[in-house]
Image (cartoon, rainbow, N blue to C red; front, top):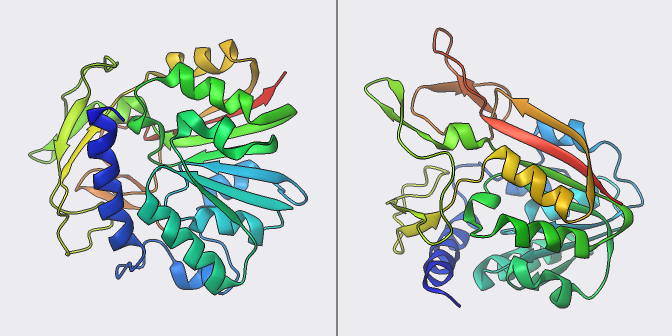
Length: 271
């Protein structure tokens, strides 16, 4: 395991401990344990009917979206994550909800071997690909775990949005549009993104910005056909201090501010 991955896994083990006992309500744990869904309106609308589909959720974290997909009618769900604490929490949630689900601890790059089967759908959402050094290797993984005709649904923070920091009530361009694989952005965050007041003990993490063109071309090169590419003015976390609510756990920039795309979604089919 390289140093960047090792540090990020410690950070995500730490976050998983806090998120699994979330006191802020951000993860809507009670709703999922009662047999409901914690998917946001955006992804719920775009994925459509999942009834009867065999779905793998890559970088599933504590598994609540994975269980939500099963509650929405998926024939089977599998979640994969590199954090042992996250996978343990996901398994516990499945047991408490009485929901049949499989959870696998592995690097996303090792998913084909770790999963050992093909799926109808790959589901990847919210804060996933910014943790990946190699977007082309990730796209090959997606293709490898899909059956022919299977689909990818990807929804994540927009790379343009990731280039900005908030200062003095406005957005300022801070980061390059593409992050070199060997020179990730380094951050030290005292708290996790749910605003839980309990401090993180492993605060350092590394991230990469992947331009939309790189993501799209990686998927095409891996053998997928792009069905849609949508850009959105909402996101599932308050990325900047001056954001306002735009539905349940969705946020947008305040009125009067210049608008930038905050998230994007891609649907693709394996040829």
